[in-house]
Length: 136
Image (tube, helix red, strand yellow):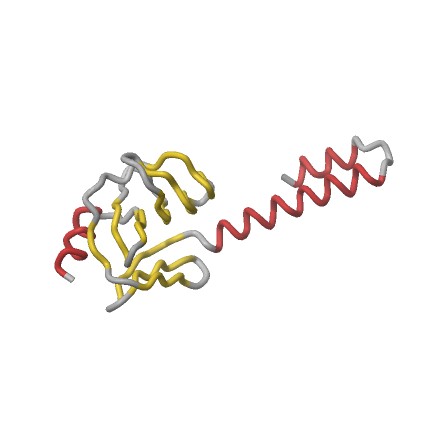
């Protein structure tokens, strides 16, 4: 990315506006990449009344009763990050409807309900997570 910024500034032929635009674009892309990295999900845990998504920095708590969902979680149309450090955001799932996604591996997805929300996760052991949710 730094080479791209440097090349862009170098080929601006002294045009300050082009140089500032290239630097600004590079800084924006770098900030987005950093934000996606630090908010990457690394673990999931269940509290009494909430799903907690542990991230590289901090955690996100989604409150509500947790129960398994019967639909397969195949992600479709997305409004969010589609692969850079995970699949996060709002996704349309096969079978209809929207869900919130905190996925790092699309081959191991599990759809659960937290309160009235549908949430897609990608645990190491999908069947084990479903069993934990059923027995909770």
